[in-house]
Length: 93
Image 1 (cartoon, rainbow, N blue to C red):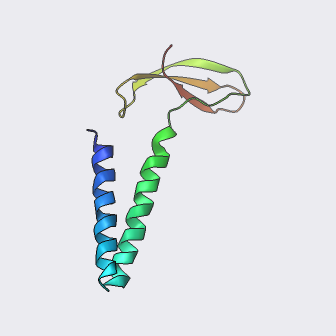
Image 2 (cartoon, rainbow, N blue to C red; image 1 turned 90 degrees about the horizontal axis):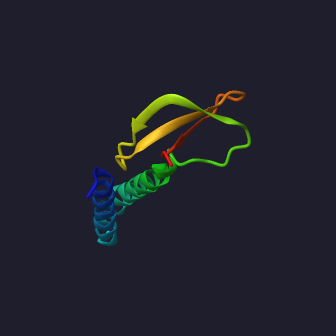
């Protein structure tokens, strides 16, 4: 189980507890916490696509830069569009 999954599980439990406490008329602070924790879950889920390749309109050139994705543990190659400077991260094929 990754740290990301643990954080999502803890935030999810926090939302459930906050909503349960809000149901017992402790509304103001618990509703706010439920909203903040829900936003945290959404942000964690959205950031997942940061290293995924995108469709390219320009010509991408491979660079010498390589690294290991901390989430998947797989090697990632870096490509750059010389005209725009946009970088793209791809798993080697």
